[in-house]
Image 1 (cartoon, helix red, strand yellow):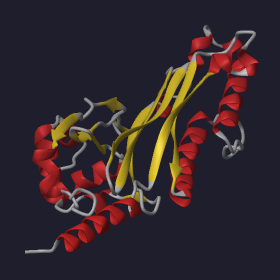
Image 2 (image 1 turned 180 degrees about the horizontal axis):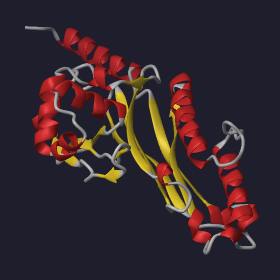
Image 3 (image 1 turned 180 degrees about the vertical axis):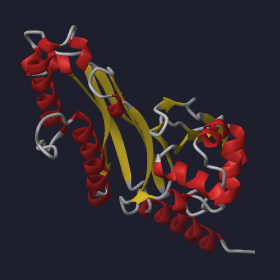
Length: 253
C-alpha cells in the first residue's frame, strides 16, 4: 500500500503540472458602433456594428490570432481605389469605411445602403484549439460578395490556422455523413460534385465547416457562377456523438 508521504507527493505533482499548463489564451469581446465614432456625432453615418474578440495570454499566440481577426475585418471593410487596405487597426479601418460611406451615400436613396454588421465570434474552444465564426452582413447595395459566413480553427499552442485536413481523421466517412445530415446533396448534384473527394474539397475551400458547443456545424453561402443561381444553403448541426470518431484526436480527444 502506498505510503501517505508518497500519496501527498503525487498529489502535489499533479497540482504543479496543472498549474504549469493553464489555457494558452483567453479573450474578451469588444464592440464598435458607428454612431459612437467622432465623425458620426453630427449624424449622417450608416448603422454599422463591428464585434470581435481580443485575445490575451501567450503573447505570441494571442498576437497571431488578433492579427488574423484584424486582417479579416480590415479586408471586409475595405472600399476604395487602393489595391489593398491601408488601415492597420480595426478602428482605423472602420473610420475609413465610414468616411467613404459619407462621401458616396448622397448618390444612394438611403444611408442604410452602407449599413451592416461584422462579427467574429468564438464558437468553440478546448485545450488545443479555438474556432472562430466570421459573419459579414451588408446591404446588398454595397457588394453582395462582402456578405458571407466562414469558419476557421486555430491551434492555441502555435497560433496557426488548422486546415480541415488536420482536423479530420476520416475524410470520406465525415464527408458522407455531412451530405446525409444536411441538404448539401441537392447543391452537389446541381453543380456536378458527384465524388466524395470533390465534395470534401468543396467544404474545405468554402470554409463551411466549424464547431460549436453542440458539435460540428455547416453553413454555406456559395453561388453557382456558371448558372448565376443561388442554391439552398447547406446548413446543419451534427452532435458530437455522430462525428467525434471521424475527427483528429489531437484536437478532439
